[in-house]
Image 1: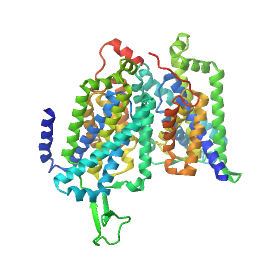
Image 2: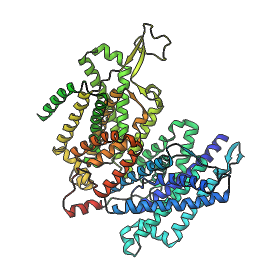
Image 3: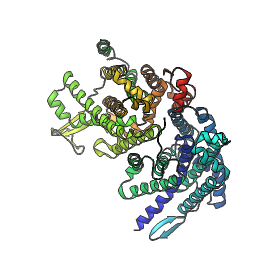
Image 4: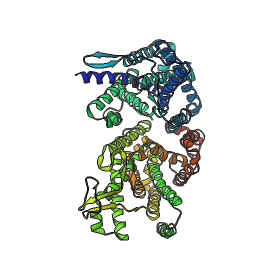
Length: 298
Length: 341
């Protein structure tokens, strides 16, 4: 029983990070209808920006205020990177075929990975302890305070996103554009602003996810974004791509399944299980758990 | 006729490669293997327009299966066909085709779900399949798991020894290493086969079906083209040749590591197809040659290699999305219609 609770907490905290990344995928897909492959690399850059920020700010002791400062700065940095990528690589291709954009996105992703390897070095770096890690004992399971911090911050960020999308003018514009881009632009919505804003939100969430992930798993390297990125994408597909609550639920499911596989079956299948879920969901219900069916019109 | 001439040419050229510098010889073989890989992926990605990102997975299946057969069934092959030139050729052909057929079966498994998927989803699913294949190989001890697999074994009374014996001079122990079957002749034999296979296929009525699926699936279907059949056929034949390429690679290196078949290998093949131009036979071959030789020149700056690949992809897509040798659809109207879908 205690092991079950332990895995459950581990899974939830990992899943909430996947959910944050998945939200970025879902937002961009909802509007531009393509997978931003480079999103996993934004997550990686978030972790590295946290690493270098804590170094320049001289944070070597766990400090909740400094941790918050690092988080906010990182979110600003990654959202700037996200917008730059969108302007340079994706915007010129807005009227191109889907395949062209997909290949470009893969190119951007590889470019960021290997430039990162060149700039930051290929060897893993150890992320500083910016959040105190005290173990709590609940039903025999040890739950770190950092896991709780990760869970709560992820939850808060999701609530903020929900507020933005549901209640602000920009949020309404985002929903309008994702519903019908042409009609929205005819109604006087500035499409370019909305798309940039989407990238700002998505990338800042990915950056925050990078920090939260490194708090839990303090070894960071330039290729760390690939697998969490893909798993988060799978989470987005699982929840129904384009659907916000779906992405959060999907992320949690993927995180839980992954930790339970590691705990009860074998750590070897850690990465394969997510892909197995993807294949099953695409065969059984390609629209995802909460997705709506779209019919291809000619 | 052309086919026979090129076969004879390969056979003659084979005699000149005998005393070549081993370094250049290795590159020559890799060029051949990459041409097979890129052309077979071109069949899926280029002609049929299904974006597969998991070609390394098919290659891994072919490579591992063939080399495992060559080692585990070595006594059978030696006893049945002997070790002469002809015997070796027969044994090699058998394992080559076994590798190709196994990969083709994997192609069916990937191809069938792909019928329901498009573009991005298919790319991720194929990537996922390749990752699953790699993880499974990594966990299989009989083929070396994550340490990699060598095509050499110690046999005890004709059966593979369970552990390395302390004293090898004992009679029942025989050290056996799979011969380095892959040479210039075999590699370029299959290069020629795949080139003729694809060019004949594409100029046939049947082959037009692939292009129809790529250009407009809905229109093709309403014209009576069985799009399902063409997609699966593309996956099966593409996977078959990737399996052959893997088997050739395995019997050249006599060592396979699961890491040889990771995501980057798939990307490398995709870059060849895109650089050359999706659906352009000659372009893809030239791209495969360039991208095999290029890293040798970039050896001093090896860390820039992937950055250059990535920039190549982005710049190509921005400036010339049809690839270096690809054909752009003529007429503004057609382009506009194509861009919408």
